[in-house]
Image (cartoon, rainbow, N blue to C red; front, side):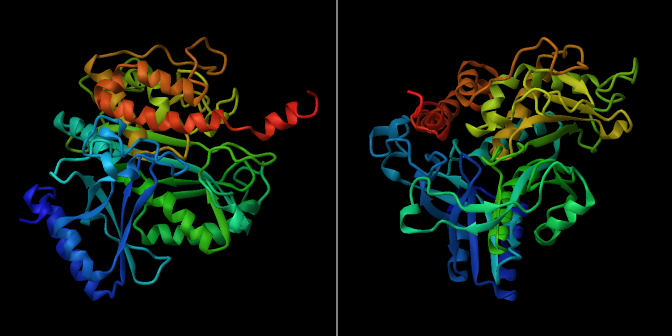
Amino acid sequence: MPFIEHHQLWNPAQRQAALEVLRRVEADGIELVRLSFPDLHGILRGKALLPAALPGALTDGCPITSTLLLKDSSHRTVAPVFAAGAGLGSSRLQGASDIIMVPDPTTFRLLPWLDNTAWMLCDVYFADGSAVGFAPRHLLRRELDRLHAAGRELVTGLEVEFHIFKLLDSRLGMQEGGQPGSPPEVELTHQGYNHLTEIRADRIEPITDVLRQHCGKLGMELQSIELEFGPSQVEFVFRPARGMSSADDMVLFRSAVKQICRRQGFHATFMCRPAFANAMSSGWHLHQSLTDSQGINLFAPQQGGEPEHGGKLLSSVGRHYLAGLLEGAAQAVAFTTPTVNGYKRYRPHSLAPDRIAWGVDNRGALLRVVGAGNAAATRIENRIGEPAANPYLYVASQVATGLHGIAAALEPPPAVDAPYDVVATPLPSSLGAALEALREGSILRAAFGAEFIDYYSMVKHAELRRYETTVTDWETREYFDIF
């Protein structure tokens, strides 16, 4: 029996979509289909299949090396895969063994910047049909299933800041290779400090309009394109989406933007704080709420089992969820801010949080409650994330900590008016501190499992060690001459 059917890996909608995929590939003259899955960092990895190979992938999946889930951000395999258990106590990962990519036919899209090329997102499984527990998309699905079992559904909205530069030199000389290789040489597309000014937005419009058109063809529901505060910095805002959709859109959006910009002579980066003069940090603000099975917002003050009273902005469900986000905030930072660079963003009075507090429509707070003017749109905005975060882990960390607050009926402390002056627990200020908070915490270890937390910490610590043993330009300028 075929692998996918034998292990019942598709639901009826996916089985029907698979038939439509085969029909479209033939009818539209598709010549190549990219199969991709998100790795630990939210980077898409996979293979491109010719049409003749596609029916096999839609029945038995597509094998791919398991080491792709064991790499740090330099693409180095950091687990001893040829040792017993691959250093993780998992015999199924040792020897650089294969895992199976199983396409999700409901994600089929034509890639508008390429001729006759399509794309599908995949999930990864072991040869016995069990889900690869380390895979981020599986992890988020488990958290969403917990919500669904309680009759609730997640709604998220994305506000994503990033930089677009003009590409001057791709730096592809023989000496530029490595792990990682040399970054490209770039120049600004617009000067900064003209936030939301029309003139500056018009200067970058030739590339942002190309991105807008392609996002539309990919089925992504953009709401606005905005000129951000810093040089060459923009923000794309998406309409709210349900369940897994926002995370799926985010991984495709980042990959698509980088590919499209490169083909147009630009370089896009979702790195939080690029190293150039006058740079501004980029954030990824995640709006979130819960609905019931009828689509009613459970955060709205008149919902959640109590009438609106006392000027409350959140229902009891919303307050419990908010309190859970606060209690689990320090543990979640390793997922919301997973790079060394991301911690350069946490500065006082910078529109980025530096301590664990919440406020009412206050952009300096970690958690911003929005909805005073429209109760039906009541939501919580988490302002901690960096745009390089793995969207599945970012969103899953929010669901897990929010559900913890609901289960324990936690109540949040009072809202703050001055988030940079209030006495409150500081957020972890480095990746090392964030990983320590994750390892020592109980909420996400209980939700994600100790095996995943230890695996994630192992990969990120390898990345951190490389950083800590690298001599930086700052050190050279600081010490080379005077000592």
